[in-house]
Length: 395
Image (tube, rainbow, N blue to C red; front, side):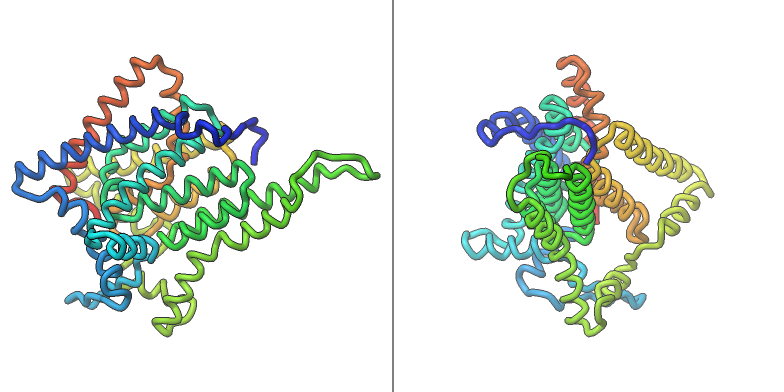
């Protein structure tokens, strides 16, 4: 992917190496849940309901319970169809309810909790592979303390998707092409942005193919040793990667009778689409027409500028191409979608490679200083998450 020298850790001791990151992640999430419980109790609300039975969580449980076909027609003519929600999380909720006494909502909560730990481990594995163990721990902690990190504990699909994406990218970095393609296909069954994972697999595989050909030695000389069948496994991984997203989109088109573009019609019913960021730009510009909304406008501009700067830093640090493609596409799709603008921070949660420059900077600090930084931000994140879910919250 790049000429950056990396080395994958052996399987033995992998969990032990990741343990500090996972324990730190669990502690941050426990703090967030505690803050939410206390804040919700003070407002006479149920924290568990906010995590499992509000907003998109309800749509996922309805898919698990009733299947597809449910829709809500709004007075303005919009049609909100549950076909907009990809099926892997509802399938897992249905499985959890079938093999245990859990309700669909309970199963969704358990899936998200387990998936968030798997995502944290995957982020650690990627960051450790590229920058070392200390940076891996810092990357996980930074992902945990994001302002909207409470979503990682909700019965939403962000944690499940991030886990599949992170481990698919790790498989790419370590040359496990069939595993990478399989996980990318599952990510494509989780969220539409799963296509970003498939694109990362494709770009990395093509780059590896070109590199292997350029390293070929003529005249019968011996070139670099390669595992038998590596090319075939690479092609198989490429073929598998887009199957999840493509399969679901085509199925929706068939079910709605609108052909390959039927899923776009379903999203249009939610006023979702891709307009290159024009709607978001207009939304931001409108903030500057009055005060104090202008402060929110400044915050939006600063936030987008920070994302761009982080991506430039990723490029300058010569991250593996798969990470650059994945993070770039996730950020692009989030910022350039014409959907509900309050959801954009949540949609950016899976773009964890953008945190790696910050993780490197944090890893260079003394342990006491980095712990102070992470602890302070964790408290602020927990308070914000509790305030947010008891107020406007996602969708």
